[in-house]
Image (tube, rainbow, N blue to C red; front, side, top):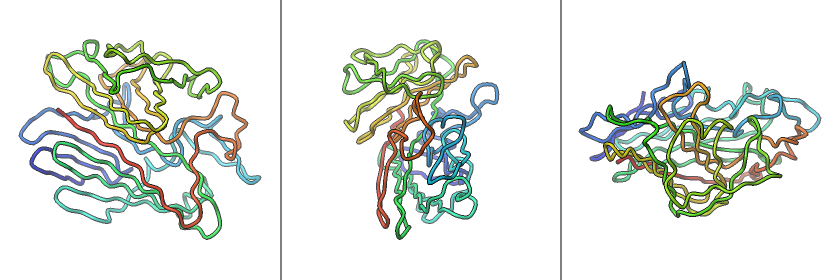
Length: 292
């Protein structure tokens, strides 16, 4: 486990999947990050790459070949290499190899940087295409889960989620695990959203800011503690908690990609919301987490 600290925060990251393991404020015992529970959701903060969400029948086709891939891609189960380390910074890297090419026929390098900047954890992703000819097709996302409640005094049902800007957002509905792009909805975030597990009976609430700045703040009124996830440039932000096997956590997920559409034909070149990177190209993405 890799630990980074500054005067305000202490964060732990597991090289397996390069996923966060703990987020605390210095000198305090409050754990902001969900610690996993086999009865509801066993993960904590997986990195989603090279897919976000589920593929139809866990398969996709590309250039006449069929590939099997489970939900959210393979990066969450791979060991990342620690390539840079300082007291308040850790950089992890995953590169394509023979194993990844059996399920994903592309060359890639994914670099994830965790940096503490005052009271925020800044998470940066860099995707590089080292191939000489082939365009890299990929999706990318974060899936951090936060404890709700954060203290013994709180309850899941009294916590709130507040959007900034506070307005009505486009929403991508899900039918089962698949995106229903043909029937967009509206998500009214002009006032704080009161949490309750039934909000997630149709899976995640998918905000679609389409690149506009969006901050989502989870607040526990009883203690005044909470966490803000600040996004910029994200086309989508998912908000999710397990249902019907409920757990005391809420995930706030910056996404650069979507699950397959309900009418997907399974061909990667037709898959919505995929990113494309030319040979030799590099793309950068970022979001931050501020616990309070």
